[in-house]
Length: 283
Figure 1 (spheres, one colour):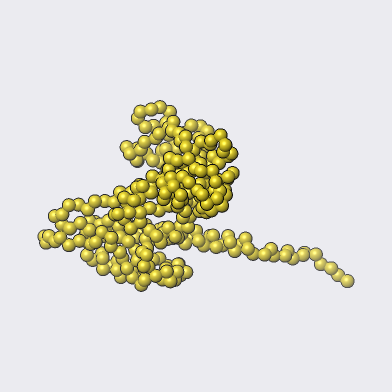
Figure 2: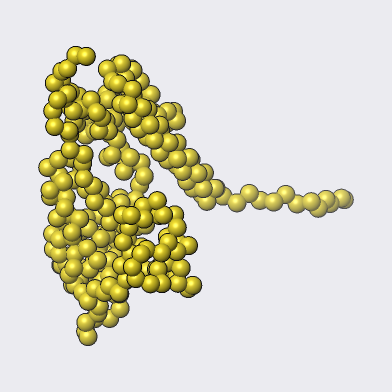
């Protein structure tokens, strides 16, 4: 056995034809006889505003102590040893003050991660507080290419008024860089994909061409993949294969969703077709 201290750089990329794809953590990124490469730490916050329908009380366990996997929690059973369900929590900062009218939704969205009371305004004088995810991002940003990702399913607007006298920023984001700077949520899957798997220098024309031809970003880096696999052990080759297949699966779903969206848009814009009359006339 030949022992070497050479290793693939931790922030390595697969490159080809103007496209780039970031690599996952591989064993080959740790030189032999050296301390193991520390795996990256990730933190995620997911919000379902204003609770979950629970008419039959099938969400929360009925008793304290050993975690009861209710019907709704059952899909999380394999993570039971790392799962904690908390109840009885309240955020007083989300409550309305005497002079405030409405605004329960935007106040709740803002208070959740900032622990502050949103200033009632629909103008530019927004005020809340830095959110906990951005406090963590300041540290994570030292070790990862992307310090944080803000992702949403609905409208990403952070200007104008959305509810009562509260601005859309309070309603449409849960992330605040500081007490006056809300971070817009990204709701376009394609934009999120390219931030996660691409690189700042990736040629946008190449990405567009691949997309229009229904090809994968992986098609542009095939040669680089083959060269890399030849340098890796069996375990790492398996990791690479699983990683690339996962990336391709995401692309397939995005392409399908984009096609469906385009089809619906065309149908909605198409003018009505006059119906032909079945009547005949004779003279």
